Length: 359
Image (cartoon, rainbow, N blue to C red; front, side, top):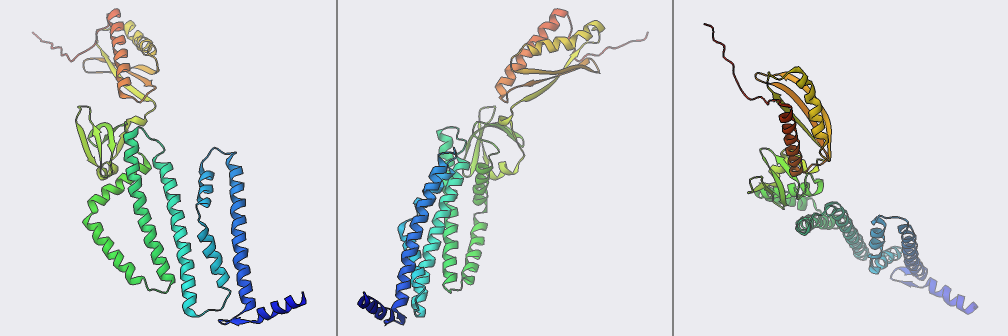
C-alpha cells in the first residue's frame, strides 16, 4: 500500500504540458462528477414529472419529459468535458477552441429546444379548433411557414451570438443584414403584409372557416383562410377573394360567434283599429312568439303614431346565431301574427293619404 501511495504521489507531481498530475486528476474528477450529476438529475426529474403527469390531464408535462429525453448524450459529454478541461492551464489557442466548442454546443441545444417549444405552442394555439381536413391543411401550411421563419431567425441570432463571443466584430454584419432586410421588406411589403396578416388571423382567430362574417360592405361565409388571401362565399353564391391585410384591418362582424340573436321589428296597423283591439295586440304578438321553440319573448309595446299607421314594436331573442335558423323563426312568427290579426280582423297599414276637399 505504501508503494502505491508513493507511486500515486509521484504521478501527482508529474508535469505534462504545463499541468501537474494533480491537475489532470481533478479534471477527471470534474468530468466524471458532472456526467454522474447530469445522469442523476435527468433520471430524478423525469421520474418526478412522470409521477406528476399521471395526476394531470394536460400534455405540458409530457412535452417537458419528451424535451428532456431528446437532449442527446453528446451535449452532457461536451459540457462536462469543458468544465473538466477548464481546470487545466492551456495556451490561448486551445482555450479558444475549447470555449468555441462549448459555446456552439450550448447555443445549438438552446436553439433546438426553443424551436421545439415554439412548435408546441403554435400547434396548441393554431390547431386547437380544426373544422375539417381542408381547414387542418391550411393551418398546417401556415404553421410550417411561420415555424420556418422563426427558426431561421433563431439560427441567425445563435450564429451572431457565437461569433460575438468568439471575438468577431458582428456590428458591420448586423448593419449589412439590417440594410438587406429593409430592402427586401420594401420590395415584398405587399406579400409580407398579407403573410403576417394571415399569421394574425390564425393566432387571434377573429373568425374561422364556416363563420358568417361582414367586413366593410361585403358579407358571406368564410370558405378558406390562406397565406395571402381569404375566400368568402357571398349570399349571391359567388366567391369573394379578399387580401388578408384588407380583412385584418377592417371591422369584422362575426355572426358565426353569435350565441343569441336579438330581433326587433315594427308592426303597423290602420288608424281605424279600435282601442279594444289595440290593447289585445301585445298579448297576441307575445302568444305567437312563445309558440316557437328556442325563442324568448322580450316585449311588445304601442310605440308611436305614424304618418299612416299605429306603430307597435316587438322584441324577441333567438337562441342561435345561425342565419338560416333565424329566418325560419322569423317566418314562423310573421305567419302566426298575420293569421291571428286576420282572425281578429285587424288591418295592417300601408302608405295611404286622405284628401279633404272643401266645397
